[in-house]
Image (cartoon, rainbow, N blue to C red; front, side, top):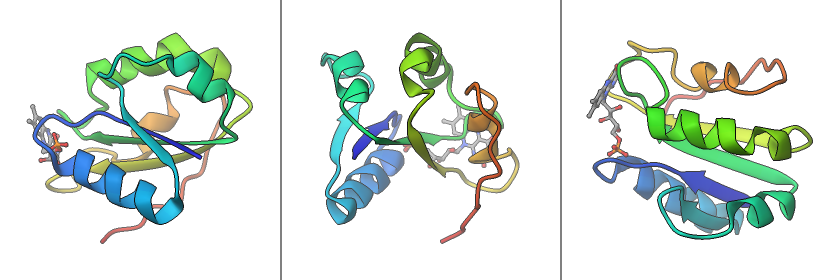
Length: 109
Ligand SMILES: Cc1cc2nc3c(=O)[nH]c(=O)nc-3n(C[C@H](O)[C@H](O)[C@H](O)COP(=O)(O)O)c2cc1C
């Protein structure tokens, strides 16, 4: 399992690292300089973690998903987001970036 995250001030980084530790997943910030294509191709499940910015997925994450979209088509996707309120669409907005339609389960902690 692979976790990929973007975090501006650390909240999402904390969640991504904690989740990855529990799930025994490899965890990387999308700002790292690693071979993401190789990592994604080698994973059956990819977890994306991001903060809601302006009720949306941050631009850096949208650009990342657009770049690697082809390699994500066959993967099981888990979506985790952090936000202040439910002012945006939370995890659902991420599904619009992918080719497939999802009905995500939304859990609040
Ligand atoms: C530029 C900006 C825009 C934000 N927009 C929203 C928003 O629309 N809705 C919301 O609930 N939280 C919003 N937040 C709050 C963040 O989603 C929240 O603090 C998140 O946990 C930050 O994660 P991070 O520490 O990983 O960057 C925004 C924060 C920033 C900095």
